[in-house]
Length: 132
Image (cartoon, rainbow, N blue to C red; front, side, top):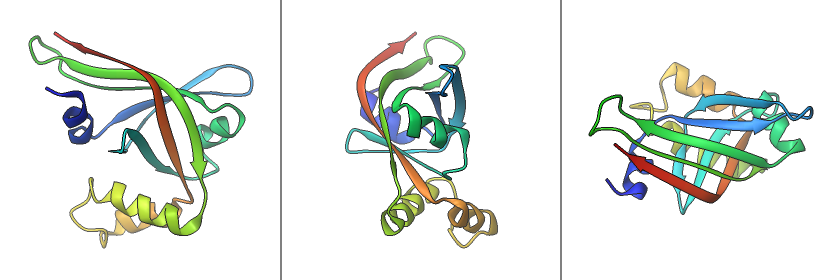
């Protein structure tokens, strides 16, 4: 499987950030992979957003499988930034949520959209893939 197609097809990215005391924080997130970058909708009050404000260095992992030959993954390091411009946040958040909901009219989709006030944009610097 090609890395690009894999990242476009998967649904969960594990995102690791570093807090002000240099402790790691890892969380599974919904995402979109577009133009060689990852986009994650969130809220500025979340730990991951607060960490990125202090330290933009992140690592990430997207993987599948528990039995060979169906094990494949991509992990990497990169720099993250918070997109805060309201219209841009709404536009990207809708794109992300459309990957997970049949309709953005669903109550839970609307609640997530209403709670999203920033987008984490991750620019990978180095990636590694594996397959077994």
